[in-house]
Length: 137
Figure 1: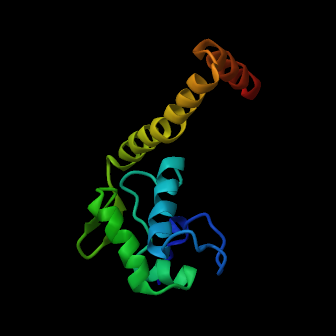
Figure 2: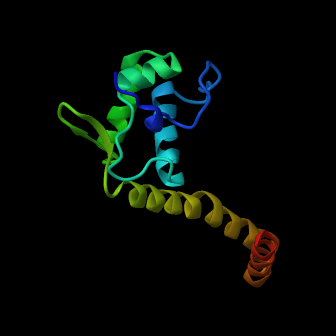
């Protein structure tokens, strides 16, 4: 018997892993993406099979397969025939770039627009950010 302990996500097993905010297959894809970005899953590392994923999280294998299919279509995972699914070489870079773009679109641009509306100078925003970053060091 083969053990895939090192390939199991660092999540607790149970019914509360997934919520109602989006389809389970999308949450599976998001969870794997988060594991890649955080470094829990490395490039060229094998991920659990859809059947292992389904058994571990007690979900339908077709649901797990749909999540994996999304990641394959995005170029995040790829399949080695007869072996399994693996994280692509460019997966982390792709994910980081997409998150940076989303960050500027969803966070920075609305913040700058609101700052303009209420008269907050860019210099004040920068001072606040630098102060906050200094507190985190």
